[in-house]
Amino acid sequence: MKTCTQFARLMKDRAGNFGIMTAVAIPVLMGAAGVAMDLTRVIEEKTHLQAAADAATLAAASAMSEEGSMSETEAEKLMMDFYIAQAAQTINTSDMTEEEKAAALEALKLNTEAMATVTTTTSTAASYDIRLKTSYDVPLSGLTALLGFDKMTIGIESQSASGREGNALSMYLALDESGSMAWDTTSVDPAQPTKQVQKSRQEEYSCPNKWNPHKMCTRTVYYYDEVPNYLTKMASLKAAAAVMFEELDKADPNKELIRVGADSYDDRTKAEQSIQWGRTAVKTYVSNLPAVPDGGTDASGAMANAFAALKAANTAEKAAHNGKGNPTFERFIVLMTDGEMTGNSANWNSTIDLKVRALCEQAKADKDNAGNGIKIYAIAFMAPARGKELLEYCSSGKDDYYYEPNNMTQLVQSFGEIARKAAKTGTRLTN
Image 1 (cartoon, helix red, strand yellow):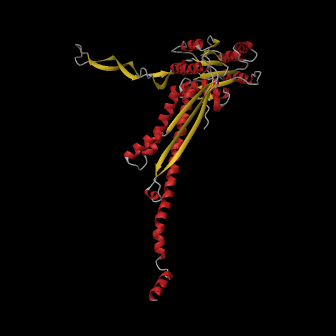
Image 2 (image 1 turned 180 degrees about the vertical axis):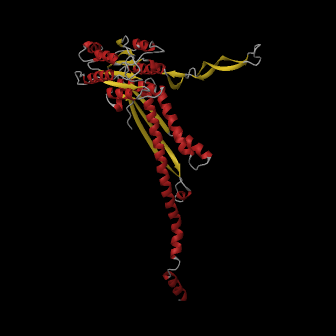
Image 3 (image 1 turned 90 degrees about the vertical axis):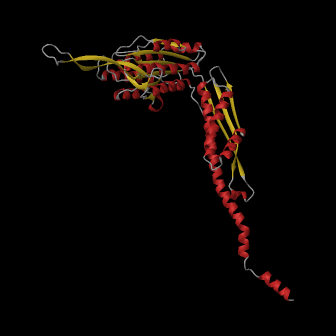
């Protein structure tokens, strides 16, 4: 009877229940805390790896569009290498051991699939579909392991697309060959980074005579010094134009979409290169511009010739495009100068400046059958304030048609971008 009473008391006794419950709950609570911390970490790593995947597909899509001739295999390798390099940065900053990092990176490579697809619609148009699919096991902390989980697999997918389109167009270049184009830029010639320049200095020497045994004379001594070999503005222009022509060649390999002409000027308008199919004639024209130009600056004659060649009333361009099966085409003028309008002097000439502005307005207002005026790309290359103001005014819009390069690299980029914009071979990316 006593035993039963003691057992009943034990059953009714609540002392120590909290300790028992705590002992049971501690592993669960620690596991929950581990899950919370690990979940934050997993989200961060997924964000980083997603950004790396997006960057890789964008890079491959852009490269395929820019080059035009990149194969699917080459694009897939580029995408894979780019992604793994970016992902490695995330893995290497983790708290894993070196062996664990190497194993994680190798597993990432095995679990990543890169796919590139090219769809060619015409000889000048193509679209590129770029996809990357990958998974990665994120190791979890010891706290989460209390719940029986040691890793969490995250899946990542990224897709980008780009394209090259053939765009029928006629383009006329109005290029500055005034004396200031002979000046140096700040860009060193990579092919010949230094040059020998003759210099002179005065030095004394002993020249005694019978009247003055201590007489000293002065003579000029000539010597050569090695100095940086900077590219001239003209050399930079020729290099930039070559890049433009290369881009146009890619966009129109069969010479059936793009017609190009050119005219250069100093204070006089030079003989022009008429608009023709292909780029052979205009390449020769630009390469033959004087290496050491001279004269003042007056772009009005070259702009007048550009407008005359492209204006809607001149049916020659429309007939030429119709003959190639191009029912419509766009018209572009590329106006480039490194100075202000001076005419045959060293001072700004407001009359010439206003004349060029009027020609620019006339060109932009000249509507074709589709209601589009002539688009003007304006390039103020290391130009003074009045030169920049004029070209910004002449451009068809500061954001998309006006360039202000201050060195050779920027000039090359400007000409290349203009070519891609006009030919509509710029990259269009979606993700």
